[in-house]
Length: 436
Image 1 (cartoon, rainbow, N blue to C red):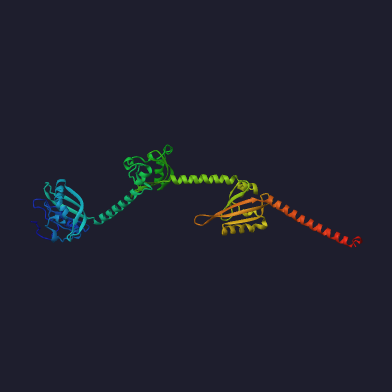
Image 2: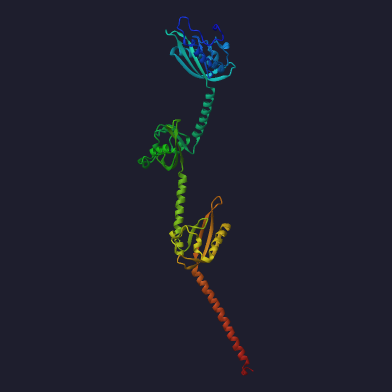
């Protein structure tokens, strides 16, 4: 049967008669322990019966002193712990080692559970005789709930990262050794986790990058700037190359000390091949346009300023690129017709295309007859990005047309003159006597 002290409301036990006055008999100390509310602090006798009870114990566990003093402390344990005799194990360990610490579920008076941090310390007299145990219990339910939420969040994040296939996402320690490995990393780089974890990430770099110590420089730059991004060739397990976009971010603890790095790699080989093909195509087109000499082909920005210039433009107008790039294309119009240049752009903007004929001015001030077409250039979002302008020198054709016009006028004049000359002769003949 549980033993109860003389007073059910006593807080501290009386020391054994044959022992020196114990420290818990000190009144200020008893008052200090009694007033603590954040921890349950109480004493157990050698068999585990509660002998003292503070305010923190009452607040955390729900028992008043008269309800719990004299009862065995196993009353605080859930059935699963009782089934494996865990309270006895705690006391035995504390008796043998002097101290026992544990975390686990405990039960309040109302049957609700809380997560407890428990420290049990064996109390012995100067002769080594066991007097009992001190037990300090902290309610860590809120902390555990926070840790559990954090654990679940980390688990969800880990599952998310582990299953990402389009990105290689992994962690490095502070030296650059691979610590984690996701599905995307295996797909992109070809290594299984068991083949790469524990190896230095420099194995992904080609010889020319290793020769200039580029992996170490990446970590240094990430450490210095807080973020590092780069594109370059990397190696797969089978030795083939791929073009990678790499982002490295240092991971620091609360003291600002770098504990490792996160590394995200994307395989951009296909994009780079497309860009390279586009670049070559644009280069071929540029060489083609620049080599055309019979047409002036140029690009204008949205304001009408020249942004590109080909050989034909130089031959026809006399300007080289250094003279004209950045200048407004109205420079080619005679002074009295500068307004037509604005009309030309306005029509092209409204109709996407504008055709015009008229006199234009070369660098040396001479004029030439030009046929020109301006095409408005819009992007995929319908935003005007500029204009393409093609000009053809039609001066010779214009000269021939003028000659033909002059010849036609001369023919018409001669015909009229001949007609007028024939009419007086006919009238004169009709008046002659011989004709009567």
